[in-house]
Image (cartoon, helix red, strand yellow):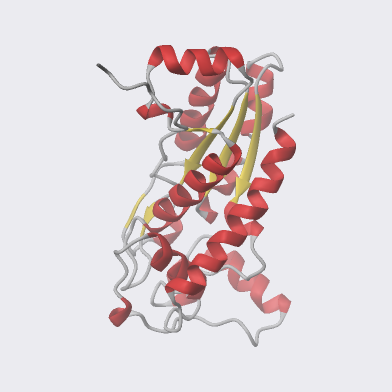
Amino acid sequence: MEKSVHKVTDIQDNFDPNLRKIVRTKKQLALIPVGSIEQHGPHLPLSTDSDIVTEVAKRVAKKCNLLLLPTITYGVSFEHSPFFNLSVTRTTLQNQLVDICLSLVENKIRKIIILNGHHGNQKALSGIADKISKLSSGQGKVFVISYWHHMNREFDHAGFVETALMLAVSDKVKMSRAKKGLVTDKMSLKQKSKISKLASTHFIKVTKTGVWGDPTKATKRDGMMILSEIVQNIAKKVSKLLY
């Protein structure tokens, strides 16, 4: 005898009759994680952004009882050239997400969160909410959240924060290869703004090694604490969107 299907949040692992019943009986909010495939220094894998945002999304989905979609692992990472990156254009990423969101609306899932895990995706994601509202005649509502805006730390790239988070969510980290990169602690706000602008188009000119920050002292314990903070803060925001 087949066991009864327990309620799961992952759309891809669910079953059609079960999923349609879930959607029919209660208004649902879907969560789409978006990452990237790009260099993260010598000690973190190319999948870092996708790995972190996937774990954050899983925890938020479980905590808030959301429908979780598969992570879109390709992002807009051309700024990392000539370091290795597998990138799609802003238009490609935006069009893919628009199509997915419209399909969700057709399936009567009308509130959608796009959880961003890569800084370079921001411009591609910025106009999606308005597009979905217009194309769905106001039926679909999209909210874009970048996870790093929900922690009380300055973000980095393959530095302390990302390395700590990866230690918490993955076994792919090679700490023996970790080296200190660009550190901005003693820079003025004007200097930080200037190099941030340059990094958005030519990351290598700013960091030389592809590392922004110092990963050498990162620990799994740090990562668990940061991850918990991020999930708690995003969950608070999401709870307000459920009604």
